[in-house]
Length: 466
Image (cartoon, rainbow, N blue to C red):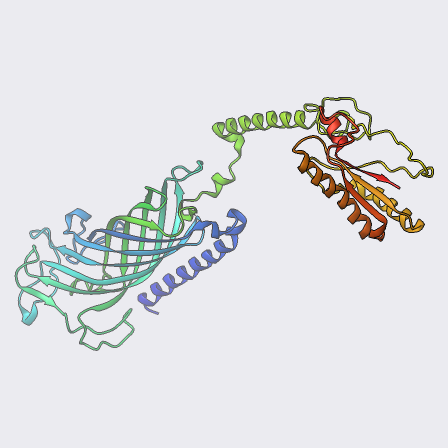
């Protein structure tokens, strides 16, 4: 197994492990957050920057010289990203770029390696420029931490990424250091279609394909709920010893790029971005946060005060259903029927009509203000009356009355409606309608004074006469 195969196998294994991590994060997310559906997980980004033909881990350029980034010529590099965040720790990113990579013999007097041989044997190369027509990679992005880690809202996010990709490129070598002069090497139009070196070259392509592994770090600054500033550095290790054309055939090409750009989070602004969400802050103990503790204590005091007010308003010492604050007759004996102010309702004394048998008296049927609807507490009385009327095949007279509010004509109609409401109930209970006489007398024959509410309550009635 050669070096290329070993490296590709290792990278593939890394990506499989990353996908496994994503699946595990997906399984654990609901237990930590309550579900990814409450967050925005998709984002797109645009970026641009510069390239250099070396990486931080060392090595030399195509001319055999060890140099820093700014001792080489820099080329432009720009592209797009699409990312899916699986948890606050991990996401998968599809990245596409294009641009140029430049390198040259910066020290002509030094022991530089002479790269390439000229076309038709003419001269040697002093500079090389590689056009990257396109580069695409699938990256695993790992969130490393945040500056505001123990606060409710994160603003700065550090991350690292590693992936596997393919780039289409064509190197051109020049006789001069400034990418001018005789073109020493240019194989455009003669490349094959090989990927990772595993396909047979066809010799008619403008660009060759090579595998590469991007490894990088970066930092994101949250500018708003939608936009973040993204800065980063990526080292790209290729499986291509012709990245800059003929030269160090024993060295695989590599380059780095520094970039800056904007990332846009997709979805509703009502949801948080999972990239900047901090579950530790969500579960953070309030006792370790002085400002939060003070807010909680103030809230507890407000709740306690509100509870005291509610208890005071709902307190009913005599149990008559009217709170003490509104009870005008406190200390009413248990079971006493009271009106809205908590005072006992005075019903007229029973008066036996001539010819009535003992126990045949029925208390008047009471009604609410301006209403002819029977109260539920009247049902038992009327059911008992209906049974007696059916059993004795007797007749009954119903006299309806009203209190003095409103006009006389209106009250006359209201009293008639009340008498008919009682009649209809008795008919529904099996009493013959012909044995029931219903009359309305309006405001006549009050049993109490209409000058007080207590009196008016008693006057809203239907009297039962057998």
